[in-house]
Length: 354
Image 1: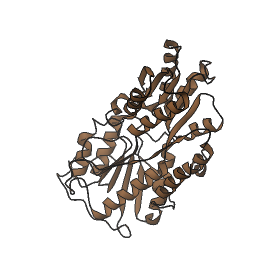
Image 2 (image 1 turned 30 degrees about the horizontal axis):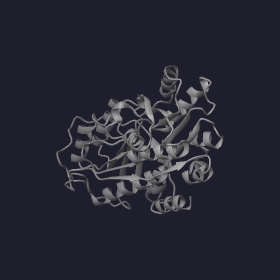
Image 3 (image 1 turned 90 degrees about the horizontal axis):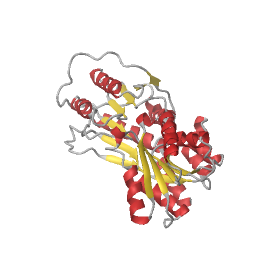
Image 4 (image 1 turned 135 degrees about the horizontal axis):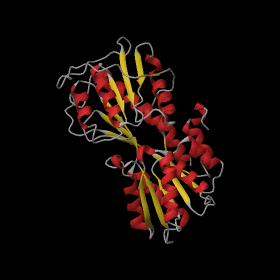
């Protein structure tokens, strides 16, 4: 535990810890002019020049965005007189998200953060943004189009670690039946958690995956409905691994509604949302644990990197990149034994979420 805390604190010390406000808006209509090919990014002085930054997630509905706003604004508080941070909400619609991205390019934003709802569909828009001299940073869900930077929590290692934790707890030699509740099918090209889980399982256990479901839009409601269907098909489920904690909560709701929230089925989540921390703190018998990503550190590092590219005028095009550089932040297993400590490190109490 001391080692875990030390790693987190070292990461946290690498970022700014101050605060200001951002705003949510719809972009103005795009102009008809196409972005110029390979336009050089302008070098900006954050103490003098006006900077416009766009944040385009798959939706602003999720609780993650509260952490994004706090982290981004903490970094930007030093420059709050010169920097405008705009939040956009495509409402889980990939085409709306692409339109917002194109509009931000047309309006000359200096930096764009985006979470790609459908990585394949974003290939051309992200390439055009980079050609227009705008650094694009993808968050969590990336894209194969070469762009300035990608940052995420670990995915393959998260799945691998989840299976390892469960195997240590419940015995790798015992025959366990596993259900995987996965991310949207269109995101699997950049999300390898299931692969990590399966690789550890195949190499180290005699467990069996009896069902594997993909949940559209990371929807808690769809996850709950799907899990209820899974429960009607299988009476011998031992373990459920969820790729994201909205999905974890949907699974827990399904177990509760089906009268099977007695601990006979153990659930393991990922990312560590306030809702799942609360369930662990309240000793939900069906939730064994989760892997926590330090989201505050992820987003402060993302913004610090973004500002670096703005002040140096660098993009994937100017740097001549043929592959997107990326950074994966560590994950930390959380169980009822350490949930109080990890809750403090998560910073959710600062937002009044736990």
